[in-house]
Length: 430
Image 1 (cartoon, rainbow, N blue to C red):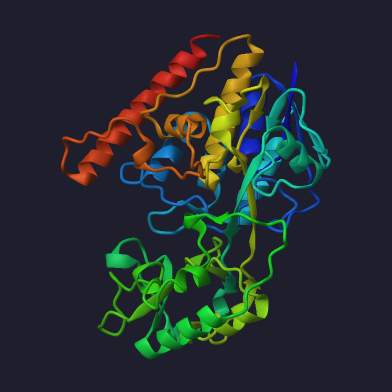
Image 2 (image 1 turned 90 degrees about the horizontal axis):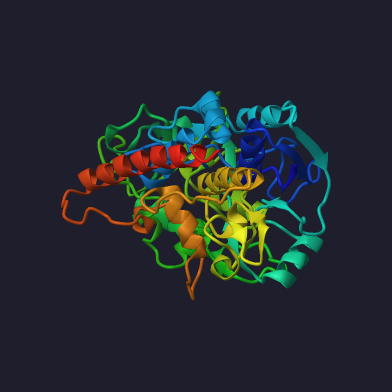
């Protein structure tokens, strides 16, 4: 029996590779070399920025814990991340090009995976749909007709060349002296920040298409929208100066730059996702002293994300309520973030593999991040919206433990123990 996987982003790549590694023939269909507005590389598994995989702190961050769960479940994206990682303090940052190339080679060279370049127009009879948050055209229409869809906007930040940063107005330091100086900081005085804020809040934004109606997801708030909430909103958010010292004092505000590749030739503007027009981005961000001569390698873009109203149409194993042989994975299910999307794809691989053996699917325990997110997307929710990995979705929070750091550690230890038990249970039913 062969399984069709539509989409070769992180979710589709995880699902396809797991199935192939466990003896299932896979037809992997992706639209590339055609692109969506957020794509620029012919390889699969493309990331928007080097730090898309976020924190690698297993015992203090829910996304870090989710990544460790994935490693133990045999994740190909986590394998690729380890092979292509670049220094970024406590974050799992990667060389984006090398990361995509690594996964692509794994998929294209696998004897059980047949890759097809095709724009899919209808839902498959059996398989996994992992077409991502930019699903459009006939397939989107098919989804909307059958399930109904929701939308929200997502934005990415600009990237500048390292050599164009004015080092006389920048300094390398991680907050509170942690890490190894993986971030480059661009300090501003009150006068410089006020001028920047005025320009940012008054800048012209790119016009959105009439069909792109929806809510802006809080976790991807464009910097100009955030700034419009108040003059000091950025200084208490992505531009906060706490934990940083320049020329013996704490700056009034700081924009942090993060390495985008292993060679450190490119830097992304942290927290500066934006929908400003390209000339406006250059005008506004070049008002920051360290970026006065910045050369932009990529401008920020904003695009529509599409996701299903999952509680009404999906089960906790990511299968459709009206068709147990049709699965969905990635951000289209209502999980938010690259890591969360990859995790859903990996779990879909497990579930579909079980189905090919004639067995029932098994959802990870709700005390694991992967299991909690699986249940979140399927639980009744009148105000459903995309969810990141977080401790709040985990069942039973050791409320009696007052120390937050210790409580997070206990949650992580329990989750990893439960993931091991889940693996034993799944493979014990072969």
